[in-house]
Image (tube, rainbow, N blue to C red; front, side, top):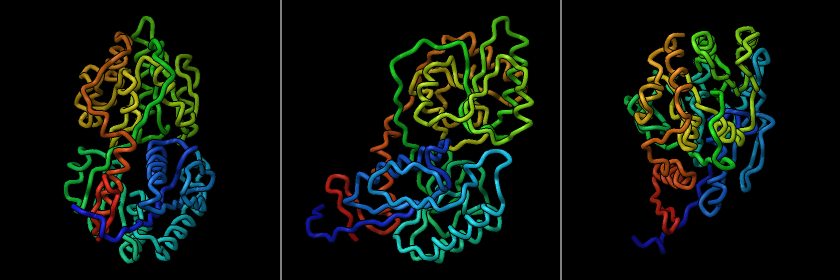
Length: 364
């Protein structure tokens, strides 16, 4: 097709996401990768982002508006309902007054009970086209009025009733300084939150320590969202070490040092830590729900449930393993440059444009 005589169009995009690095979490890293990829395509788009205060502004050609109050980035006991309400008002005003072509918004804002319904309605009335980004399995009773992004084919099936849904892979680029021998510990990376199965992991690890003659250590990296109950649960257990949150760019290095990574969460869309662990050739243990996303994970490392006996079985298998593993998985779909192209193509389709990678042309 000859695009030389077509009118070029530049897409104006507004991202609305609660947190970006240096705050931890897979979604924060995903969105930074989106921004970084699109910033290199300033011939095709103008990008701005509305997020919480304190985010890093290290991406060129992006207008950062970190005017939201710190709510999602706040730790256990530091969350304020007043700040949360203020954030929704700020988001609502930004949507209503939007002059952008696309509003790319995290689903947590749109489907958060009654406040979320107001945001959904504002998006529907806005002059911008809404792209609602679903990164997990926590949402129901929706699926109309907007365009939707999910981050895995598994989620696409899970949300089969959602209309206008597309799959956009999680962008992943792993860097670690050389190959290392697996250490004498297993690791957990992620929010220390109830829905992540971390309390069950701690109880199961205690069971494993009792049964093993030479048990591994458990290293926990993440932002404590539980507080006193979690800290009491690990108090006095000499083989559990809690490091708190670490910078996202250090995660790959810590993965490369451990015997295996455990993700006990029952609900994940496309967990970044799983991809990073597999790319680095380390043993990965996860719940059977997550294994449905990655069928290449050996069964001996799959938790059928979150009981102490199941953790004991899987952790014992990790102890007996050499720590190294290989996976039959196509990682190229997660290359950031490929994800950026797919994202631009999606925006173009939402706006009714045609898109070609070769000519980088947008036309009506």
